[in-house]
Image (cartoon, rainbow, N blue to C red):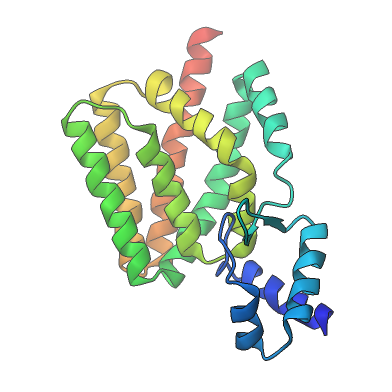
Length: 227
């Protein structure tokens, strides 16, 4: 029974319903929802903890974690050794994030749209005040990951979250430092948002591919200048 319960819990993680960092309902609530004993719930959770998918929360409770989170420091070290590795990561992002944008356009909820809309408004307000806010960029891409409703993609994003922050900070303060760059990124994000809002996977994918293609072109140009 505990194995069956573990499979059911894992299915909710895999579907994206419970993403990285999500705090699970209590044992009693889960037992009532699934029609099983709390003993079965407890055994199933312990099994998933052993697999590295769940972790105990200080003060009580259980949360979803990224099973390969230990990879993140290694990625950070690679980037600090050579900025060329950021170019490689940008190429990888242009592939998987285009897919995620299309998936988000297909699966997004009204709550997802509200969150993305709020992020867009905050980004524009910061630009008007002359502020460079990496946090809004990160929030935008994480919100798309959430809207994709893909548990696998959410786990991937959880693994690279640290390197994503460093990458975006490099973009906003070194690679794209001007107000014109800020406005261009805002327009590109708006196109992605409109594709998701319209439930148009093709438009969302193309807009994300154009955005990250523009980023890659800047990498290539900077590398040529420095060579």
